[in-house]
Image 1 (cartoon, protein in one colour):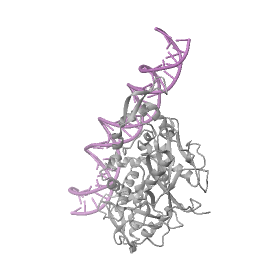
Image 2 (cartoon, rainbow over the protein chains, first blue to last red; image 1 turned 45 degrees about the horizontal axis):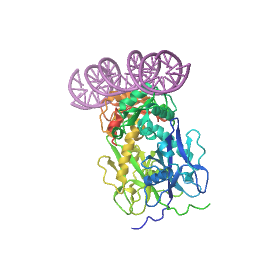
Image 3 (cartoon, each protein chain N blue to C red; image 1 turned 90 degrees about the horizontal axis):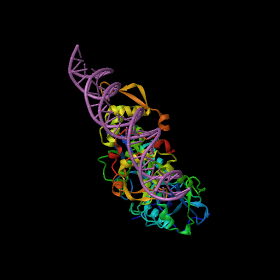
Image 4 (cartoon, protein in one colour; image 1 turned 135 degrees about the vertical axis):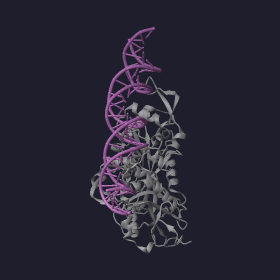
Length: 236
Length: 236
DNA sequence: AATATTAAATGTCAAAACAACTATTAATAT
DNA sequence: ATATTAATAGTTGTTTTGACATTTAATATT
């Protein structure tokens, strides 16, 4: 059949906001852009969508190129379509955020993109509208994590309660009472306590836990409430 | 400066899922598609993005063409990019949902699109992946309305509590205890009671209320809880 | 061997929020 | 005057919440 006539066609890109957690702070993975314009400036990892691939496919491809990882938590955020957002040529960009276990990445460094982890707070200036995209991704992760257990995706398979609490405290830049935190955590029944302890952080050691994958998937949509008054903490 | 070379360009469309409320049930506005392929089949209202307009701009244009309305609540949902979603030519579609006061629309019928309101439950089969889009929009509106006061956008400026409750009950297909409903509603301080009554629905009549626009905007991000256990009602 | 050190783990209580529930009131129709 | 219909208001028992301090486990030190 014929093509649609008299319509303009555009470039379509995906850009990934990759989050990791180093035990202390939330970080994002940025690259030095390898081509003009804005060559060697800091940028999100992205790429043009190819003729035969879906958006999710493109995002996964880009992410695997950068990190070597597959099966990563990846979620579409939104499409950016300002006509002038790319000075060379009009390009629609669909953003995704990725949550990865930062330690898995560190074993896979591929230097070709000059990728670097930055603390969310002091990330460098980014090209085009990527700074705006990062801000939106930050809001999205805060919003979503206030209600759903996505932050587990940032931790290793085995993790401790103090690690988890640090993560929540950093994401929301707040202090959480750990007795209340544990109570709410326990109520979800999402965690399975392991016999082993992590003794790197203290003399006493903290028990490792793992996710109950089945319950995690079954109750993913259930509204959580780990963070008291989350709406007060989510900037708008 | 040069264009990006060796990259494929695609058509970009926006599609609008337009919701309205007739006092009883949630409805969506569909049109009979005016061109091939799938001419005369039911479809979402959409259009190709033009070279000089943004995505939001395109969505607003399309919506105004269809309804004659401007300044409507419009929110981007997601981008659909399956390579085969349009059989003629690969087209990326960015969906938006719109919430309109159905009565405003009825005064503005433009017949050129053969638009018709359908009950959400018995909407006809739609072209391409539009059915999937509608399902996603339904989930989105349920999810969002469980937390934020967007459903007011479906009502006229003056509305009664029973109207509002009907709306919530229909959206979540559930029964709500109206004393508890009113108590929660009152707690938000979003409503201003008017002196006038709507006597069309009953002998006693129900007071009209209007939104406190200032508080509505100021507290839009605050998490509401009009619906007990909303997560149990939001299908996933 | 005893003691100091460090961070993890644990429990209680009062206040608030919540869901469930029935009786009264306002307005009209008969 | 009375019957009818739907809106409106209050109570109670239960659950959830936030605030708060001490004990415990393991190691390091003397």
